[in-house]
Length: 101
Image (tube, rainbow, N blue to C red; front, side):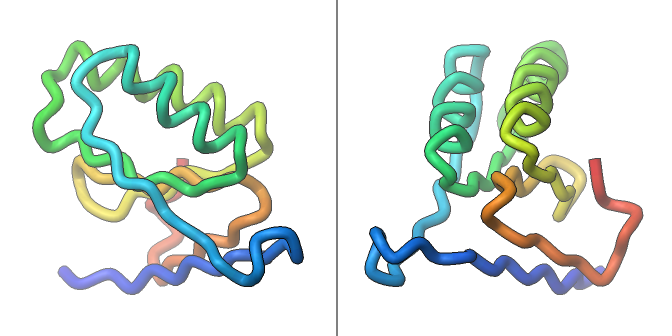
């Protein structure tokens, strides 16, 4: 089923209206630190777990969930193994509210 997701950046004047979204395919817990560093720097991340084994998925998701909470962000599921993690300066809206974490 198609899902419409809108990402809106509340731009800072420092970045001249430019923004970026990182895409990470985590393999281990070290990759969770990379995701967390981007979130801390107010950069949203699409985390693709399609190639991550089940045990590492749990570990990485726990770590990323904690960081997302710490930066007052949100996590939205966009497919069974793909999530958008966004800091609080980013608004992520979906037409399906059940996909929030």
